[in-house]
Every structure is written in C-alpha cells, then in structure tokens.
Image (cartoon, rainbow, N blue to C red; front, side, top):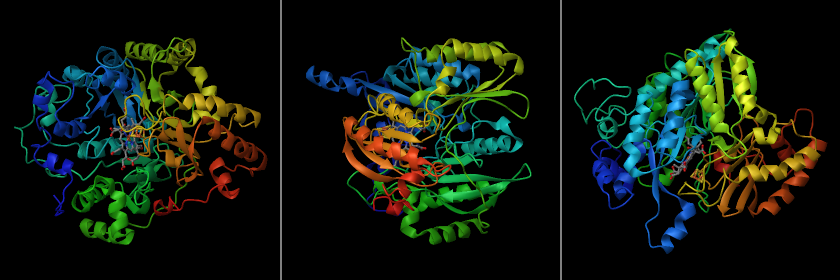
Length: 575
Ligand code: SRM
Ligand code: SF4
C-alpha cells in the first residue's frame, strides 16, 4: 500500500477484507434486507456485481415506507468479447431465470444482467460457471475486461492480437480464492479442483489493497479504433508489417470520468508513449500497472485514475519511471493511422472463407418488445449454430453491438433467414447517425444517473433523423453519444455530438470529437431540453451538409466553422 495517510474509505475496506471476502457471506444470508452490509457493497464489485435499486420505484417505495427495491447488476467478463452459441444461450436463459429478462451488451464487450435479487446471486454466478464464464474482476479496483478487436478471423494478426488480449486478461485476474469460495463452493470456473490451498498472501501483482482505482486496457488494430483505445488507462496499437505483428505502440493515461463543478477532474486521452515488441508487451503493461499501484492516489477516489498520476508527475517523469522499472526504454512510437471508431455493419467474408456479420443493437439492450423480438431472434440464431456442431460464435463489440462470426458458408443463408424473419438485419439500414450512436444504461438501474440515456436517445435520434434526412445525410456516419451523468460510460467525450445528463430532461451538449476517437470534444451549450437540443443542432447539421469540404467529418467541421475550439489535451477540456 502507498504511504498516503488519509486513506479513502474503500482503501480501508479493501485492507481489512481478507482478500475481498469481507462479510459478504453474512450479507447474503441476512434476510432482513435485500441489501448488503455497507462495506460489502464495495467488495462485491470485485466479484463483478453492483448493488442497485429500481429507481423508477423509489418514490412509491418511500411513500409506502419500504426500503428501496434492491437488486444487483452482474457484469460477465468476456475477454475480447467472444462468446460461443452455448454461452449466449446460457446468458439468455439466466436473464429470464434470475434477471430482468434482458441482456445488456456493454461498451466494453461484456454482458450485464440487471435486476438479480440477493437471494439469487449465487445461483446466477454458478450459472455463468456452467458455461465457462465468470464475473471476477468485471468491476472493482483491478484490471477490467480487456478489450480487443472482436474478429480474430479477419487476419493472422487479428488472431494474434486476440490471443495477447486473453493473455493480458488472465495475467491480471485476481489470484484470491474469495470468488470461488463465495460463489462456487470453491470450484474452479468450469469445474475441477483448486490447484492449491487458498493462500491469501498470493496476490503478487496487486497486493492486499489492489489498485487505487479501476484500470482499463484495450487493444486496437489500425485503421480501426473500434475499442476506443485512447479512453483506456493503457491503449495498445498493433503495429504490423507485411502481415506480421511487430509489436505495439503503448498509450497511457486515458480515462473519461469527471465531476460537474470540479474542473480539476477531466476526461483525458491516453498519450502514445513509445513502442514495444510483442515479447515485451506484458512486462510493459505490468510495470505501468505497478506504477499506478504504488503511486496512484489512495486518498481521494476522484483523482485516483492513472491519468491523474501521470499529470501530477508529468509525462516525461512517468516515462522515466517506467523505463527505470523496466530496465530498458521503449522505442519511438511507430506511425499508424486510425480512420474510425465505429463498427462496419453487414456481412463480410473472412480470409478463411467463413462469414462474419455485424448487427446493430440499439443501446446494447437485447430485449423482446411487442414490435421487435430481438432477443428471440438472436436466441434462435444461437440455437441453430449450437445444433450445427457449434458453428460460428457471438462477438460483442465495443460499440454495444454484436457480430455473428465464423459462420460456415453452408449455414449463412439460414442465419440470414432467421435474422430477416425477426427484422434484425433490416436495422443496419438505419441512418448513419443512429448506427453510430451509443448510450449508457443510466435510469432506471444506475445509481449515479441524473438523466435518462439508453431509454431516451432512440427517440431523440428520431427527431434528429428528420433533420439528417432533410439534409441528405442519411448515409453519413456521425458519432453521437449520450450518458446520464458525467462519468462517461458511453464515452461521450469522444462523440462528434454528445449529450451528458445534468438533470431529468436536461443535457449538456458537447461537439467536435475526432471521428476516429483521437480527439476529445468540447462543451457547446449547457442544460438543454429536447426542444433546445433540436433547435441548436438543426442549423449546424444543415450547414455541415452544405459547407463541408470533401470527406470532412462533422466533428472537424464544427471546429472549422467556429462552433467550438479543438480540445488538444484533457487538461484543456474545460477551457
Ligand atoms: Fe461505467 C460507473 C455502467 C463503461 C466510466 N458504470 C458505472 C456504474 C457501475 C455505476 C456505479 O458505479 O454505480 C454503471 C452501472 C450502470 C448499470 O445499471 O448497469 C456503469 N460503464 C457502464 C456500462 C454498462 C455502460 C454501458 O451502457 O455499456 C459500461 C460497462 C463496461 C464494462 O463492460 O466493463 C461502462 N464506464 C464505462 C466507460 C467506457 C469504457 O471504459 O470504455 C467509462 C469511461 C472510461 C473510463 O473508465 O474513464 C466508464 N463508470 C465510469 C465511471 C467514471 C470513472 C472515473 O474515472 O471517474 C464510473 C463511476 C466510478 O467509477 O466512480 C462508472
Ligand atoms: Fe450511470 Fe453515469 Fe455511467 Fe451512465 S455514465 S451508466 S449514468 S455512471
């Protein structure tokens, strides 16, 4: 642990938790409340779960003098976002059995279940285990789900990068046995016996108080920045020559969260700090994680992310510290170009002759409604693939979408027919604005939300689509993002157009991020309601259609036209 004297409450809870056990067992058996003991609400995050309450019901429950209707969100780690048809079906089934009947595909290639009651937590986590899935390190002050390009079959380099992302994920999985003891009766994920007796001291990378804060890693293969690597504590940019992976440019210090009214908190993009070979990459990442473990702020969690550690010591000092710890220096960064951070929709044939299909899942929410049976359709595809020798698989993208990949040519027509039957394929013909939209969960489950996001953005886009169509921009990709608070879960500060919730029905409007996720946007107007949003954006969209130069992106245009100035670094985001 660092030498800080005024440790935050969470640091103290971690310290006395006996490697994340705390009193969770007692919390689970306490039938007086649907909640956990206060300390355990921090610890359960390391097990992949958050205590929440249905906020739609808050005032009614209060009126009835009842405690909030507590339930739990559980996040399942899917390194690189790849799930077999069987795993999809298990998740789908658990969503009905114990959850709220929906699956949420997150902005970091994971599944989330919502609405799981305390009494069902163990059974749900055991259910993941039957499909070789787990929720360890889904949340908490550890290295989170490692993101990677979701299609390893695209080329040999893609396959290699995916394997490296899995290795990173395994390397940083906490070693404590608390997860297995608490949820799986001490079984390993997928069955089997533990290799050795529990050894609470055996947390060689993290130590007993883990990291000061969450830590995120993503890999991307130019020209696609579909994992938004610059929003991560560490972003790795694959460098290839003649179809061979040479290594990675290493970017450090990304993170998007900020707090309204605290300008010393800010979103920041990771700085490209050098190049390392494939053999060095794990060593380099580990040493950055260790710098953060040792030097990160453990007093005030608002300043605990690596981005603040770096800005406080200065980028050069950070690099020197890294090089000293490594015992060698990173080479100069190699040239690279990113052209987009979105997904490419539709069917594409892989180099291996198999087919890959990217589908649009609005807000990442897989649910059946009266009009649109998305969940049933994807379930039918999964069942068909499972029954055909497990052909194909599901890939969660960093844009809350799903890919159905690796489909044998003989099965393509059937997959297509199922998706057409349910109207799922037609979704990819929506406007370029909608197809490039992201919205975080926000209400009703997120305890931090000030405003709607996932439940509201689709209807706001209906209104903006009218302007988009009038302007002839239906096929133009424009990155649009919304969150219910400034924490940044749908990476709003990387939206060419973005809304961040201030209060119910009121949003700050940000403009001018780079189309490929390489530049943050800037605040344009504050506290707008829907009418004001549409009124502000209509003339800008019209002007963009008329005045853009060849190939000019919306985010670049609003800067050239003087609506906002370019943000060149997180530290001038608020200027
Ligand atoms: Fe997030 C907290 C949902 C991606 C920055 N995020 C939360 C919590 C757990 C709220 C809480 O602490 O009580 C949200 C749960 C809502 C719910 O009901 O499910 C939540 N975050 C999400 C997801 C599900 C949004 C989505 O709609 O897809 C994403 C899950 C990703 C995953 O699978 O792991 C999600 N969160 C992100 C991202 C985007 C990314 O990582 O690419 C960010 C910005 C990048 C970053 O980390 O800086 C992000 N979430 C935050 C923060 C601000 C962190 C900070 O440094 O200030 C919080 C609040 C916190 O940690 O204190 C937060
Ligand atoms: Fe919740 Fe805010 Fe994250 Fe949205 S951005 S999920 S409202 S914490």
